[in-house]
Image (tube, rainbow, N blue to C red):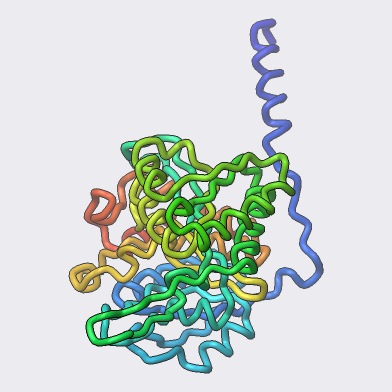
Length: 363
């Protein structure tokens, strides 16, 4: 062997020595299949949840689904669905269409309140092979899910005058702040930004900020800053790479998460979920477009990527990390290759073609 090859060989050996990660050691019984409540939902929901079912079966993932029909025009969520989620602790859900006006409550909001899913998490990040205006976007939006403008406290004072109440409490503000900082701490995130409008809503958003500051003081290793929501919107579209973890009241978080998703590649590729102390529901991260339109349903060209990545989040939540890694890696390979993409990503593939490509890329 020549002298020139020895340093190269040594370099390769030194690299290979550190490529294998420390193994995951499960507890006895952790491999037992877990039941997951499945709500296909409305519009493209059955298409994308069906995609997840196919991929889970191809991976032989240790989950099985209890499927229930729930639709956004129902007056309430059937009791058996709530019982299933409470029993299984985990649910995977397609979009539920909320009618505009007409006095019909949002079943999405009802589910969050019934199960106390107080934290919504949306992960917005660049995907290799998917060009966007901005690079180095990796934002996690954590939104309070149970109060604020979505409290549902509206009434007509007199004909032609409607009063809608925004409710902010110390308890809910503190626990969402704790969740945001805990998430940052456990995921090696460096900064948490609280988004607010306390310059105008001095009492309500002031209480939210006060709670965030108190929690921030206990996490000295994590940088904390605050940003007014209108400035935040401008900063998101001009310099999104400055954001890491964002914690927000209910309404602002909905707007910020959808904006961040659009910047990073679109709502069709951003995963997310809603979590509380005892239960979790995983769904497409950004709500815009999660039901789709009739053309997508008829042509069967809905993008399944967001829900597939949300399913990877679900698998990690269930303590099946290797299955989560396999699924996430396969999805990212398909995106990077660029051969199979739905219309929202500049392609013309069907949902099934994307699913087949993901399955083909599973390790």
